[in-house]
Length: 438
Image (cartoon, rainbow, N blue to C red; front, side, top):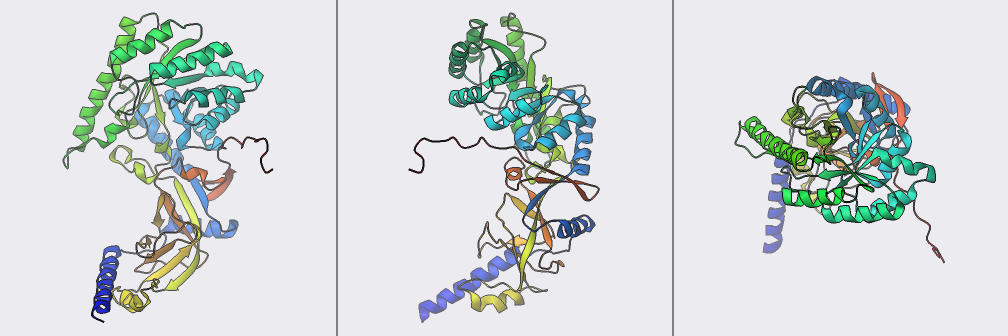
């Protein structure tokens, strides 16, 4: 009995602690989300959907133009916006034909859908992926690889690509990844740089230098004391620009036969693009942007303070229950309610456990004791939020690139109405295997 008593007491203490820790203010949907709730209840069957607000996207486009000026040199990151119609929309609005793909199936779809696109591969593909891509091209598409820049990070990878190019009688445009401080690989010093450039120089029939890429996402997260973040980021930006210009200057002076004023000098990204202005692109002539157009929660940072979230998950409430009843702690339900001024309400939703957090109604939280679910997520609140069964809740994704692929066709919004259902990009179809199923 003594042990049982201590167990019950400990359970009580833990329950009280968790309730007090999770206590939060609550509020109903604001006008924006109330309008979306009414719209979706009228037109949607009820399973989770992904919404892209084009009015907010337009606002974010305007911010990019404000900071950079000429957006024809902006390169759209396909991984962050894996939807053909959305990419097409952004290309038209920005006046650009430049895209960056990080995934072989998406690169192939870009090549086929946009006949004038300038395509930069955003990470070094293993040679097997590179070869598989080439083998998927139709004979009439082989010439289209002249629009692709293949990213390489080492002399060894370039050598592998060169062997494939020789075997297939191709000439490849090569962009060299250089390390400007992120330390995610790439050429890090002039000795390594020389090895790559020498291989290019000795294989001009099959390899052509097309550019350099120096990604600088680490600038946005420069460590700093409170109140000194801007200064720390600016200091690292200067270092990055110095490193990148060091590579371009070395190339121009030591390898003049490879240098061209038309080289693609790519860098920056959504985290850091605003540190480059219309008058100073930090040594780049090509800046990649993707997530800044959506502003998922991971991009709620000072450098994107003037952007608006434009991407939301919407899903229905399946069940609404009074109080919180947790298996094995049923006896504590009255205590849970008594500790909350307005009582606790439990909601079970269609789906859940996405890379996202509830943004409306305010105050809905997951419960660390009950646990998570991808089938029927439990969300609780300590106050009134006006939600009823079949109402929608809205979540802000933490990123766009993975989340956008989970919901089928995206609902494009304009003026509070759905103006299109846009399919997302597709993976390669499964290969047939001899003997499968026998």
